[in-house]
Amino acid sequence: MSNSKSRAHRYSMTGFSTMLLLAFSSIAFAQGGGPGGGGPDGGNNDGQNLQPLGDAPAPDENPITESKRVLGKILFWDEQLSSDDTVAYGTCHKPAAGGCW
Image 1 (cartoon, helix red, strand yellow):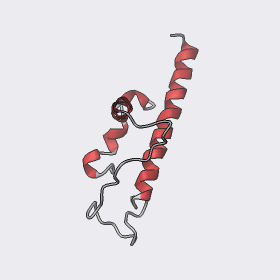
Image 2: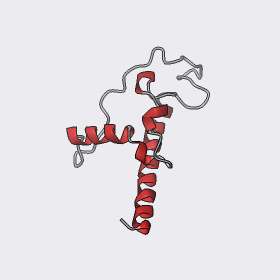
Image 3: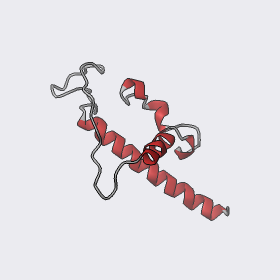
Image 4: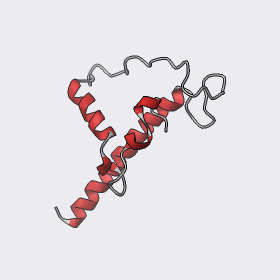
């Protein structure tokens, strides 16, 4: 791959990873996990009393499939999406901690 194509590919992957980050962040904020911690009362509950989100909404014309779910999991752990190919989204946003670092 030529240098300019490689650079264009990296920029497109950076943009894609940014979109993923924004999507995951918006879910965290909706759950009360934004700056300052919290739930509805604004306190920091350290992950206590959190309820499952349930099924993610999906448009009828673009349903969630097993292959899309697997792709999302692969991208979540893909270090190549970072600026220096060393850090995956899942490195900091640990699923066991509810996606928090």
